Length: 117
Image (tube, rainbow, N blue to C red; front, side):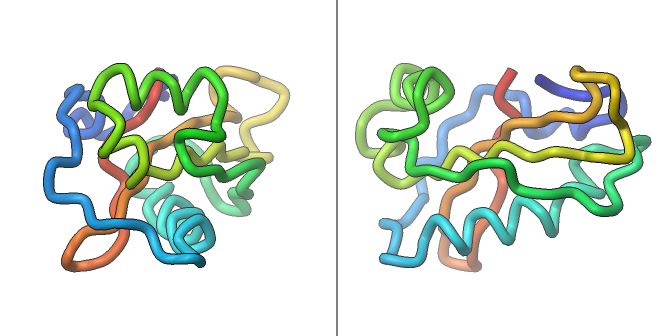
């Protein structure tokens, strides 16, 4: 779910055509990138203290991972990590305190390529 002020570039439905395969520690790298980009991707929210609630390769990420595979295909799904974030300072609002993003590895490193709604 995109939060107010989130970067419009992320919810475009574009697939990560230049994504590279994920290494063994790919889930960790993707989760770190999601945290690092949270303040930029969710402008206007109090993202300080953000936490990763879960991070899994799309094939193991339930409905959100299936959404990536359905939208972009198996190859993109194999190269994507779905990261669920929690913004504790926005609690008790469920809609503002949680976010789910798709992250892949590219030639220049990991990058959030879409906010999953």
